[in-house]
Image (tube, rainbow, N blue to C red; front, side, top):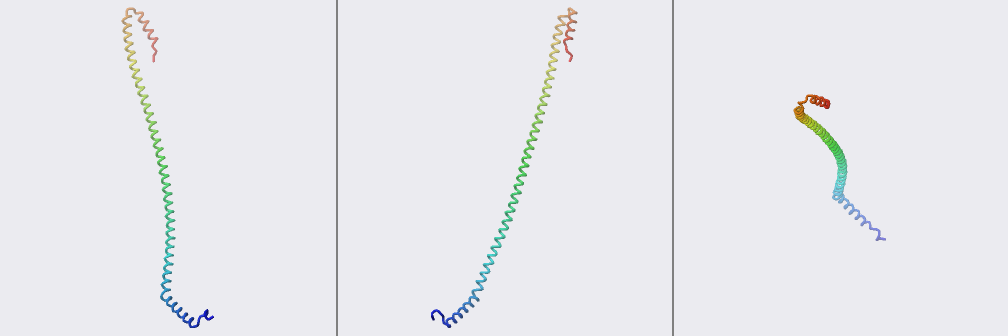
Length: 164
C-alpha cells in the first residue's frame, strides 16, 4: 500500500510548491486575468446596453416613420379630394359657361330671325305698295272713262282689305 499513500515529505513539498505557485499566480496572474474578465464583462454589458438602446431608437424611428407615413397618406387623400372637388367645380363652371353661351347664341339667332323677318315684311310691303300703285295706275287709266265702275271698284277693294 505504500504505492497508493504518498509520503509525508512528498506531501510537504507538494503543499509548499502548491502554495508558492498559488502565491505567484495570485500576485502576477490573477489580477490581470480578473481585470481582463471584468473588462470583458464590462464590454459585454456596454454592448448589451448599446444594443438595447439601438433597439429602442429603432422602435422610436419605426413609430416616427409610421406617423410620417400616416400623415403623408392623410395629406395625399386631402390633395386627391381637393383635386376631385376642383375638377368637379371646373366641369360645373364649363357646363354653366356652355349653357350661357348656348342661350346667348339662341337669343342672338332669334334676334337675327326677327330682324330678317321684319326686313322681309318691310320689303314685302314695299313690293305690295309698288304693285298696288302699278295696278291702280293701270285701273285708273283703263277705267277713267266710266265713273260708276271706278267707285264700285274702290268700294269692293275697301271691303276686301282687312285692317291689321
